[in-house]
Length: 185
Image 1 (cartoon, one colour):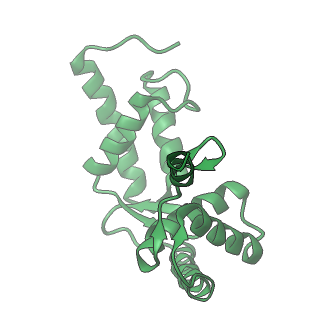
Image 2 (cartoon, helix red, strand yellow; image 1 turned 135 degrees about the vertical axis):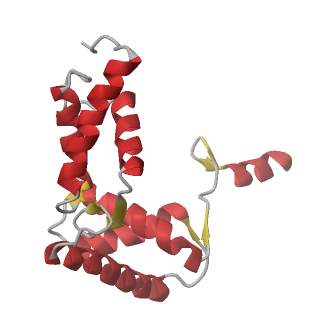
């Protein structure tokens, strides 16, 4: 059950407590985005602003986003996770290595694509090449993380290649081909 709405003053007081607690934590170390979400959700539940810290609602997303902005959190993409931190916080060596690995893998994927993409390529094929590369070279990563990384790398690399939108389908047929066939009838 969703908690009853509070008056604005009470809501502000409770959210200030959440912000202060999160601020204390992020002033000490970087967090993975998963840790950030879990901490904020747990604090919202502790303040009875949400009923279940394991459910992500529109309210929770709004608070997460707003707090990140208000706290000036920066975000970096690593290979294993993405990281959020406050300006002035020194990143751990492990996080630095993970961020470097993300960049190194991006370079290796780009080199692989330069060999395997000679002409234009559809978005779905481009994504599939990247996902297959990750699966072959990094079998230890989860399927979810592989798909997430494939999407991130595809977005960041597509401008370097002739990536085109997938053709529109009507049923099982390419829309353009179907229209051409129907025009000839």
